[in-house]
Image (cartoon, rainbow, N blue to C red; front, side, top):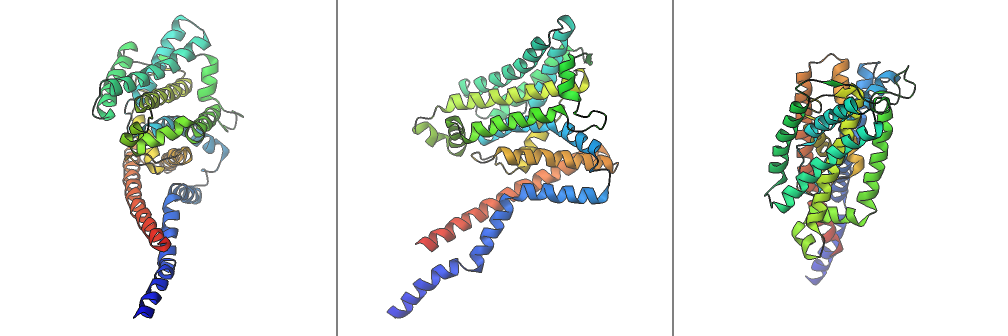
Length: 350
């Protein structure tokens, strides 16, 4: 009997290390790399179904159309990692552009216009964070839903419901022009996106603030107990999300050569969808810059592909919604697989 028990103890680790365990590890690897894999498959399928996709002009269009979504997604990523949500970013894009256009009408200073646009975004985000934290609102959904309506109303009032034409040439160039403009290749907005992505990557990966952010999102109660300034982290997160929306407003204003009170309509949903498609979780504590960008470009490629195939814009909304649901379900499956892998490792090491 003793020999039998010893044999069973020796067999158990081998069973954990066997095909079943390796399949779990493979499934987890595929789920973690799912966003990039989906984007790659999507690009291959679209390129095979329409030869126009890989032309320089169309690739430039994809970069240009996706830049604003990707910029907003970087800010939204920080919020979602902290267990929050920011519904006001689309309205902030509109208000910042409108105020910038009004300033340009009365003062031709490029520097002042840029400062007003970015400052508007920062002010809205800071207000969201302070009201949420200091007002002890149960969930940021309430605060940002209210600011979505207030900020959009302010944009419509300030612009009298119409486009205010005119932006400094430098803003037009950043938001609406490309290197090799004759071929429509590589918009300047892409470089703005790259710069912001590098800053976000450094902030979330190498700074103490980044570790605090993930700790707050993972377990805010435990983070507070170990001395992390949870309130300040949350305020900074919403301020940065607002600033990202201001950058999005700058790019949009340059693209439109003016400030539109309807700009950024539903952009908040695109930014949330991009982050969720990229594998972040509403439960907080998980998500990274690379996958958020992958999610944004997935949305951009889908919309571009549907446009190239002359698919009605209504179906584009349906397609994005279906993909978000699939992404959320993928996150649920990934969580289950991760739990099984951790259990298997614990048994193997026992």
